[in-house]
Image (cartoon, rainbow, N blue to C red):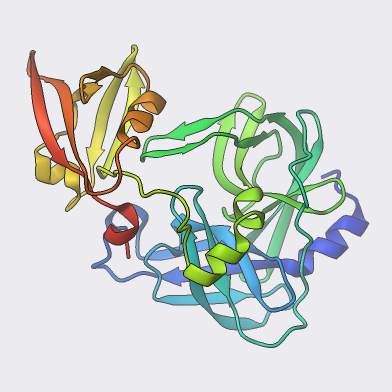
Amino acid sequence: MNASVHLLERTLPATVHVQVTVPESHPSAAVLGTERSGSGALVDHHGLIVTVNYIVLGGRDVRVTLFDGRELAGEVIAQDFASGIALVQVPGGDDFPAVPVASEDSVAVGDEVFIVASVGDAARRASSGGITSLEGFDANWEYTLDRAIFSSAMNPGLGGGPLLDRHGQVTGVVSLNLNEIGRFALAVPIAHYRDHRDELLRFGRRTTRPSRAWLGLYCYMLRGHVVIAGILPGGPAEAAGLAQGDIVLAVDDARVQTRREFYERLWEHRAGADVRLEVFRDESIRTMQVATGNAEEFFA
């Protein structure tokens, strides 16, 4: 751990442990469970916390443990499904410790960074490394980032904690453990919070961005093909009859050869629009009409 003692002393008090209970009836419970734990960072002195959305998705009972051991009730006040970040508010005045947010996207490949994460209640761990890539990212659950932060710092605890630069400023929100050669953690750039803070606080979501068509499926790449790995129960894909193992060939007659291309073609449509998918199943090509949904409404 190479982060200086001074930086750790300054940033540790502003990190939190987040414990969330989700009703069994919530659509996310089957995939993410009903009891979730994560990390977060206080980004202002009034108790505003930035974390990742998958931790708090569907949360009805949110408990936040501060570095000094205090446990407070939290409230999920904003969720950005496109970027994957969420905001939680805790009561208690205007004297919370806070970590500064980087004022611009000034990090570059090779820059030193460190991660502070919760490992349960008031316990924290830290890890340091360097930025290895700022390229785009796509995941198996209809999610992409045009610019993600990959680092050689290994996440030492639970997801949702801050990725900090050498000045101790939040430059990203740690989302995933990758454990790839030279790339151990992926963080969502803090710009998704910083540049849209007022909108998120006012509306609880990004309202200025057009809604995206959503299917409720998981997919992976296999030998240059997009293969459906799973279907979310109750989602549009299930209603349309799509199935695990289907190979997606085209969206509205536009051929797709990568997962990212599949998502981008899908997102040319707004939520609720009908799309036509060409899939390969049982040695034949089928055309399927799908009424898309809205992920924000489905998981509300």
